[in-house]
Image 1: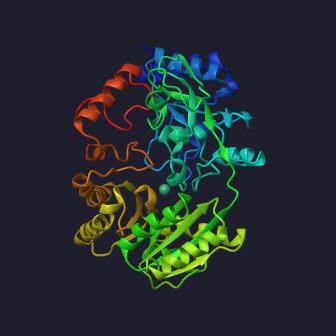
Image 2: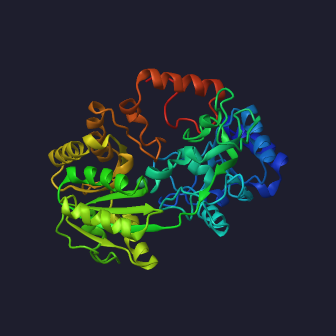
Image 3: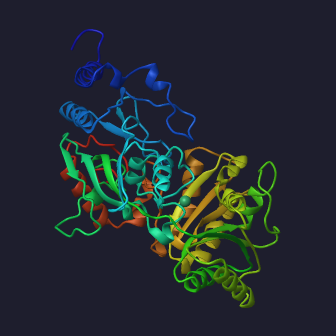
Length: 470
Ligand code: ZN
């Protein structure tokens, strides 16, 4: 060991040197260049890492990972950094591999109805490119302007139209991924149907960069909906929301594409200054729903709503009459940032059967109120997918309070076989609670898969679960 150098310093120099030699200076950032970058779009800290790589090609990603593998060097892939569960968090000992330069939409094929993209493509850029050709990429979420396709794949992103089109997993036809030893796995399937053995792409979807680094993908496109109607509805009892969901989907022939519920506390928050949005309906109802249907004539819709009134499923309603009004209604749903008026806040994205929802939310609030004197639990979600979001404020922040609040939210899920994550993933944040959503057999098999694909444990280490049983 050279004088003045610790073991880890000399190793660090060696791996960064090898990476610089292989990729060139302009692909390797170190020091202040790295530390000057935000660790996430909703985070106030900056990236900690030995180096940050910005490869331009799959070949460069492969060379970089091969070098990291040789040096037992951890490597963490970065997309748009819009994640919410500390899945892209790094330490000063990690190498970050950012896909930001691999942002080409390589091809859009209107006949096959596919798009071939590099994983650094921003979601909104793809949506717009596809729409120009009269087609549609259904995945949509609030962070569309920053989130990348690679990030969407690594977390199996959901968002607002899952009830109609499914999650990212349902859009991905094929992937190209770089494995832990640098091998490029090309599974760029363009077909909807392919039952020739294991469908390996699913290993890389939703596995948060722990099994491979996705570099390119083939995505399935849809036709642009001809009609898109959006309405905002007030409901006066919880059980009516489930009935109304079923009713709307049935009466429009399965055309329901969004069913976004808001509890009164969230609705009041996003329609009260300093929030910019005006309330489209009075604030007196316990629940509100933003409903979107695609491909249905206005008349059919009006009839369906009128009948819903008659059956007393809904208490009040407003239908968007213009694109501007439609966007105003969506702006209510998207203005989750208003919750930060009560910062620090803890955010959740639980998943459970619709039939258990009312009881579950009551139980979570009961527990929170037993723990804390002043509790705000802003509640909203993609009810059609069984996915609720809580943004909880208890007047305190920090890991101890987070843990206490998490217990209130996650523990009641065990009895009803719910999940700690519907769409955000596990990362570091939810790792201690994985056992609520997955049993020992499942977590054991996850370890076997991880061990087989990444025996040195260099890919996004420590995320989702620990390799050693604890
Ligand atoms: Zn969501």
